[in-house]
Image (cartoon, rainbow, N blue to C red; front, side, top):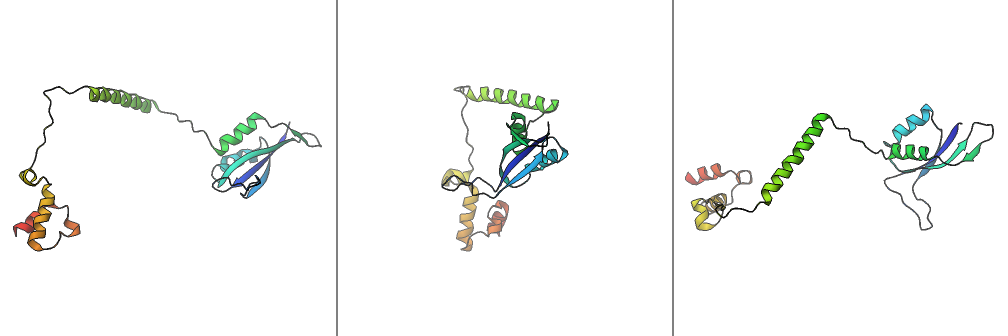
Length: 172
Protein backbone atom coordinates (compact mmCIF):
# COMPACT_ATOMS: atom_id res chain seq x y z
CA UNK A 1 0.00 0.00 0.00
CA UNK A 2 1.40 3.38 -1.01
CA UNK A 3 0.74 6.22 1.38
CA UNK A 4 0.80 9.94 0.78
CA UNK A 5 1.57 11.85 3.96
CA UNK A 6 0.57 15.47 4.40
CA UNK A 7 2.83 17.33 6.82
CA UNK A 8 1.91 20.74 8.21
CA UNK A 9 5.10 22.67 8.94
CA UNK A 10 5.12 25.81 11.11
CA UNK A 11 8.01 28.24 10.74
CA UNK A 12 9.52 30.35 13.50
CA UNK A 13 11.12 29.98 16.91
CA UNK A 14 7.94 29.16 18.84
CA UNK A 15 4.26 28.54 18.22
CA UNK A 16 2.13 31.68 18.40
CA UNK A 17 -1.68 31.53 18.48
CA UNK A 18 -4.32 34.16 17.94
CA UNK A 19 -7.15 34.69 20.43
CA UNK A 20 -9.45 32.42 18.42
CA UNK A 21 -6.95 29.54 18.56
CA UNK A 22 -5.59 29.82 15.03
CA UNK A 23 -1.85 29.77 14.50
CA UNK A 24 -0.09 33.05 13.75
CA UNK A 25 3.00 31.28 12.44
CA UNK A 26 3.62 31.05 8.75
CA UNK A 27 2.93 27.45 7.77
CA UNK A 28 2.82 25.27 4.73
CA UNK A 29 1.54 21.89 3.69
CA UNK A 30 4.05 19.38 2.33
CA UNK A 31 2.85 16.25 0.56
CA UNK A 32 5.26 13.31 0.38
CA UNK A 33 5.02 9.63 -0.54
CA UNK A 34 5.86 7.55 2.52
CA UNK A 35 8.98 5.38 2.29
CA UNK A 36 10.47 6.99 -0.83
CA UNK A 37 13.93 8.49 -1.12
CA UNK A 38 12.31 11.95 -1.16
CA UNK A 39 10.57 11.14 2.16
CA UNK A 40 13.81 10.00 3.79
CA UNK A 41 15.83 12.98 2.55
CA UNK A 42 13.14 15.45 3.61
CA UNK A 43 13.04 14.00 7.12
CA UNK A 44 16.83 14.09 7.36
CA UNK A 45 16.87 17.84 6.69
CA UNK A 46 13.78 18.81 8.66
CA UNK A 47 15.63 19.27 11.96
CA UNK A 48 18.06 21.76 10.41
CA UNK A 49 15.39 24.15 9.16
CA UNK A 50 13.82 26.99 11.17
CA UNK A 51 10.62 25.11 12.01
CA UNK A 52 9.00 25.19 15.42
CA UNK A 53 6.41 22.46 14.85
CA UNK A 54 5.78 19.65 12.39
CA UNK A 55 2.61 17.61 12.50
CA UNK A 56 1.08 14.91 10.33
CA UNK A 57 -2.16 16.36 8.98
CA UNK A 58 -3.47 13.31 7.15
CA UNK A 59 -2.47 10.13 5.35
CA UNK A 60 -3.96 9.00 2.05
CA UNK A 61 -3.94 5.52 0.51
CA UNK A 62 -2.88 6.09 -3.11
CA UNK A 63 -2.44 2.48 -4.21
CA UNK A 64 -5.74 2.61 -6.15
CA UNK A 65 -6.86 5.24 -8.60
CA UNK A 66 -9.11 6.68 -5.92
CA UNK A 67 -7.41 8.28 -2.98
CA UNK A 68 -8.86 7.35 0.38
CA UNK A 69 -7.95 8.93 3.67
CA UNK A 70 -6.74 6.37 6.21
CA UNK A 71 -5.87 6.46 9.88
CA UNK A 72 -2.44 7.91 10.73
CA UNK A 73 -0.03 5.13 11.68
CA UNK A 74 1.89 5.38 14.93
CA UNK A 75 5.06 4.51 12.99
CA UNK A 76 4.67 7.57 10.78
CA UNK A 77 4.05 9.82 13.79
CA UNK A 78 7.08 8.42 15.58
CA UNK A 79 9.29 8.77 12.50
CA UNK A 80 8.28 12.41 11.99
CA UNK A 81 8.72 13.20 15.70
CA UNK A 82 12.19 11.63 15.79
CA UNK A 83 13.20 13.43 12.60
CA UNK A 84 12.05 16.81 13.94
CA UNK A 85 13.28 16.45 17.53
CA UNK A 86 15.71 13.55 17.45
CA UNK A 87 16.10 11.54 20.62
CA UNK A 88 19.83 11.39 20.95
CA UNK A 89 21.12 8.02 22.00
CA UNK A 90 24.62 8.36 23.34
CA UNK A 91 26.81 5.37 22.75
CA UNK A 92 29.81 5.29 25.04
CA UNK A 93 33.07 3.60 24.23
CA UNK A 94 34.49 1.12 26.77
CA UNK A 95 37.06 3.74 27.82
CA UNK A 96 34.33 6.33 28.44
CA UNK A 97 32.35 3.81 30.50
CA UNK A 98 35.43 3.03 32.58
CA UNK A 99 36.17 6.73 33.10
CA UNK A 100 32.58 7.36 34.21
CA UNK A 101 32.78 4.49 36.70
CA UNK A 102 36.08 5.75 38.08
CA UNK A 103 34.70 9.27 38.44
CA UNK A 104 31.70 7.91 40.32
CA UNK A 105 33.98 5.93 42.63
CA UNK A 106 36.19 8.96 43.20
CA UNK A 107 33.21 11.17 44.00
CA UNK A 108 31.92 8.55 46.40
CA UNK A 109 35.29 8.32 48.17
CA UNK A 110 35.72 12.09 48.33
CA UNK A 111 32.17 12.47 49.56
CA UNK A 112 32.82 10.01 52.38
CA UNK A 113 36.04 11.78 53.36
CA UNK A 114 34.45 15.21 53.54
CA UNK A 115 31.55 13.91 55.64
CA UNK A 116 33.87 12.55 58.34
CA UNK A 117 34.05 14.73 61.43
CA UNK A 118 37.39 16.42 62.04
CA UNK A 119 39.54 15.20 64.85
CA UNK A 120 40.04 17.53 67.76
CA UNK A 121 43.77 17.70 67.04
CA UNK A 122 43.19 19.01 63.53
CA UNK A 123 42.99 22.77 63.52
CA UNK A 124 42.97 25.19 60.65
CA UNK A 125 46.14 27.25 60.54
CA UNK A 126 46.04 30.68 58.97
CA UNK A 127 49.43 32.05 57.91
CA UNK A 128 49.63 35.82 57.86
CA UNK A 129 52.24 38.19 56.50
CA UNK A 130 53.46 40.88 58.94
CA UNK A 131 51.59 43.55 56.94
CA UNK A 132 48.40 41.55 57.30
CA UNK A 133 48.79 41.16 61.04
CA UNK A 134 48.90 44.88 61.72
CA UNK A 135 46.36 46.15 59.21
CA UNK A 136 44.22 43.10 58.53
CA UNK A 137 44.50 43.76 54.79
CA UNK A 138 46.26 42.06 51.93
CA UNK A 139 49.89 43.05 51.18
CA UNK A 140 48.94 44.18 47.65
CA UNK A 141 46.40 46.58 49.12
CA UNK A 142 49.05 47.95 51.49
CA UNK A 143 51.44 48.48 48.60
CA UNK A 144 48.75 50.35 46.67
CA UNK A 145 48.08 52.57 49.68
CA UNK A 146 51.80 53.33 50.09
CA UNK A 147 52.06 54.12 46.36
CA UNK A 148 49.11 56.51 46.68
CA UNK A 149 50.72 58.25 49.69
CA UNK A 150 54.11 58.58 48.00
CA UNK A 151 53.09 59.56 44.45
CA UNK A 152 49.69 61.16 45.21
CA UNK A 153 48.00 59.10 42.48
CA UNK A 154 46.65 55.58 42.03
CA UNK A 155 48.67 52.73 40.64
CA UNK A 156 48.29 52.56 36.81
CA UNK A 157 45.55 50.17 35.71
CA UNK A 158 47.92 47.89 33.84
CA UNK A 159 50.08 47.50 36.99
CA UNK A 160 47.41 47.24 39.72
CA UNK A 161 48.02 43.54 40.33
CA UNK A 162 51.77 43.57 39.72
CA UNK A 163 53.17 43.42 43.25
CA UNK A 164 56.83 43.43 42.12
CA UNK A 165 56.39 46.54 39.95
CA UNK A 166 54.76 48.45 42.82
CA UNK A 167 57.55 47.40 45.23
CA UNK A 168 60.23 48.52 42.75
CA UNK A 169 58.55 51.92 42.28
CA UNK A 170 58.26 52.43 46.03
CA UNK A 171 61.96 51.57 46.53
CA UNK A 172 63.17 54.08 43.89
